[in-house]
Image 1 (cartoon, helix red, strand yellow):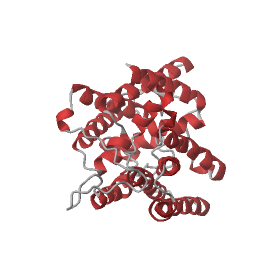
Image 2 (cartoon, helix red, strand yellow):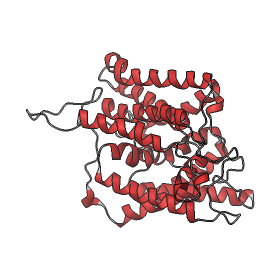
Image 3 (cartoon, one colour):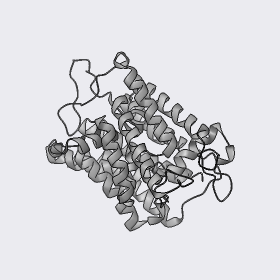
Image 4 (cartoon, helix red, strand yellow):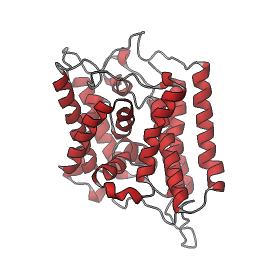
Length: 344
């Protein structure tokens, strides 16, 4: 169902975590590259950003489960992608591994996913990220609307209590928890954090961990961590009764503020004297120098393959980390596939 309050608050948390990491640590919040680094290069434990971010992401569903479990997604218990279950547990397991392989291979070759390209890249007006997002979003939309499920219908699941565009609202306790979390996160990122933390390795690690928690909570509150909700957002090209417009609010309240912040800060750009202002907690900016000229067939095909997996399952790397915490068996299967896809 349409969740305007949940998604707006979640989007602000996504903005706070991703833009905060850029502003203070000088790093782009690209979960696919972060996850791949942790899986394929565990010796990089000393990295100041990757492992603290993943630790923050892992912490977020545990915090929600402890404080307000009603805000957790309802995942299929048989580990099927989103809707009708496969014929057997073996088919379900193989499907999960296969979707992980497609996601791992696709994000490796297009060098990003929904966080790095769509949220962080588009807000930086990166032409490569805009092209990648257009490719994988269009592919996901077409797959979700055209690929038949085991019942012969589309993969898009209907809502049980009326059309999916009908709004539902959080109760008072949920509003209090989400609102307090959002305000605390924004104050930490933009007010107290810069005043308390110093330019040191420990400060960068701490803020990376906090950014991971904020981003994970943003995925949970906004609905991005709910595969059925993601699939229903694709339905605006199909059955309007199945269309859930919630995730459009991420464009307004996550990508929009990040774009404004990027244009205001202009990271890496020299001033009139030729000096480049460093991030708050780091000495230099770590931004991709790749351009449209670096786009090749692997980039395009990788974006299409990631879009295929996303359209079939509604799962991308960030939500996959959260689901792995809540459904460890599913996580082992999907992460194994992701690891294999990254090696191919």
